Amino acid sequence: MRMWWIAGALMAGLAVAAGAFGAHALKARLSPDLLQVFETGVRYQMYHALGLLAVAVACDRWPQSNFNLVGWLMVAGIVLFSGSLYALCVTGVRMLGAITPLGGLCFLAGWAVMAWKVARG
Image (cartoon, rainbow, N blue to C red):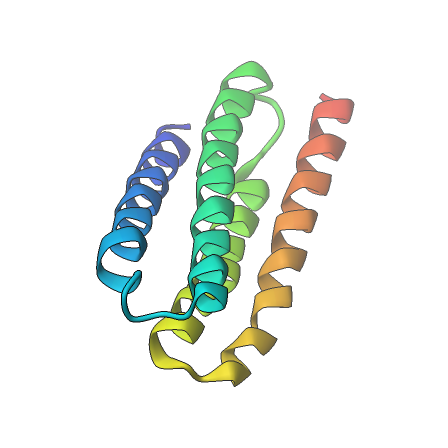
């Protein structure tokens, strides 16, 4: 449980830092379209940082269920989804956008597994 609290807090803090970086350092360098893409990465990172905190709560509430898969799927989703959007914006390499849907699938799978485990718990 502690690991997911730490991961959630770190990912939330990094989302705040990325948002500030986008608003201040990248605003003058990126087109409005790419800035919006960057902000989408930040938003989804924050949503799933909060999701990691929900994993920590679920670990406490249903200790007989193992929520580690949920947590790892959310971490993978943040890295693949948000990370690919950040990299696309900073480098301009459009092919990185092909990675983004894999992160989205990790997010979807994480929420589905959480629902399944809570329903079973």
